Image (cartoon, rainbow, N blue to C red):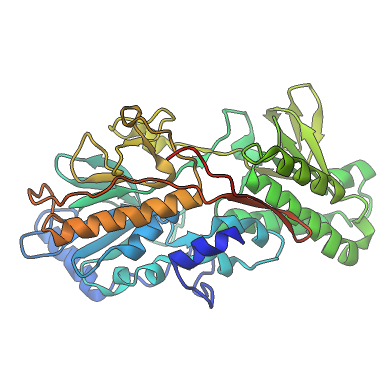
Length: 447
């Protein structure tokens, strides 16, 4: 699988992330030494992690635990840096395999890797931490960020707590969020497929609907509705999920739920063509395979999403029992709010070395970043391989800076950053179910 090389390059987790149980759950709290260090800073009048001083390691603060942030964390030289990771998620998710967990092809623990396993320093080194929090603001002049803890509404735990973290180097790797195009009802009624808890909710809803469909007295129309799985978005994620779902129906539903096997079906809605970034011959192959697997393909634009149905631009009503939304990603409100120049698509603007040029010691990588127009480069696609490559490149750049004595904030001993970042596209892959997949090895012109 094309994702395999990326997975191996990020971390060797042959036995899976057995420590992962649920998206609300976290691993070990701060070490005693870490807590003591935080208290010492608080005593100095700084509400959080204060600035590093001469003789201490420089501190790199990484915002995010996606492909870019995790690869950066893995490669940073912790003999010369303290690493602080601030994120609302204490694990990295192998997103290309997420669709397979929805129907049980893979278990959830197989696609999640704890941050402490990717970079052991955050749980062992006295100056390195993982902080379960969100960054809410940044002060580039003071070299600090504002944070707030993430509790997901839990009442019997620590309430939302605000604190600051001082940095020597700050890296934005906070990713993007699912695009809804402002369509009413999407956030309330659809399920996205970007996190492990999304996959858990899809599996729960799918199995619940299968059980409820056997209830006596249920009308034929209602039975067909709750067993109708609708996927909006014909990109790789939407196509792969549709393929996995059709396999599930063929392999499991027809054997274990024979009473309702003729009622369950899958519809994939796309405004244009499915897998539009792939070669036209591969697109046609995918279309034929999906239709052969029983997936109904509909070309249309969703105008409104209601609790039990969605409305297309031609007025057609499509009832559903499960609605999965996968129409691409865009900048989050947090990224939009940052006081930095933006790339043409609204991401944090960076130069050829992934630096935010308007401020010192700030970098951005992954889906939240894009080249500024002044660089003459196209904005790179929001792909795992782009983010992973950027994380690897930036770790090398920061390690060189540290070895040249330029690891601390506002250092005058900045090392030569070396060659600029160049992206070479390795190809695209999408599975379509029934042990079939597409691989497009054409080289991208961007980079």
